[in-house]
Image (cartoon, rainbow, N blue to C red; front, side):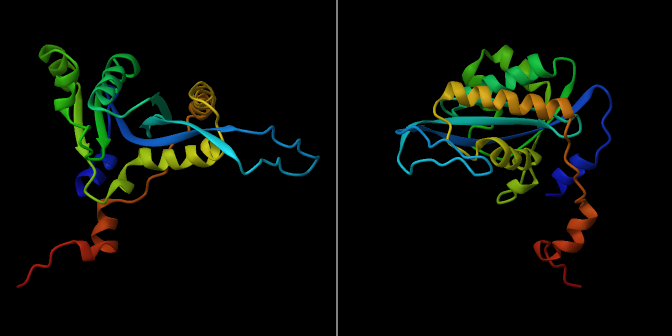
Length: 207
């Protein structure tokens, strides 16, 4: 935990960027009946019946100090999917910066995944651009990308979305609006706070 908090308190120079990564899923749902037209001043009504239309994986990349986020939609969340995402992060999103990457310790979130997806030379090149920090077990709330996913769920995903194309379109509009405003996370929890408020989690030292 203190490692992540120290990363968040670090002062970054122009050649570094902090990026947090997390994942969620969204089930596509199609209407089986045309929704009732809404009346003025009233909420739109939907029939309780619906048709499931697949589930998409959503990768959230969030640079909290830059106010930048990118949501990538994939059919699955395999080692290769993660590796391709990281290559895009390194080569397309931040090609000129060292990336300090914060994420949870999911089994796909390993440098070994790069070696499964790419040649050893390419995997090593990508890995060399990263400084990875894992959130502790049961401590994924320390990942600022999880906070941004919460915002995404409230502002964009809390409704029926019929298919993956529509999902991509809605996500693109949402992230462009957030990026245009450069919305950041006001993170105030420090190592000093943890040692006081989470004192029970620290081992006792007997004199």
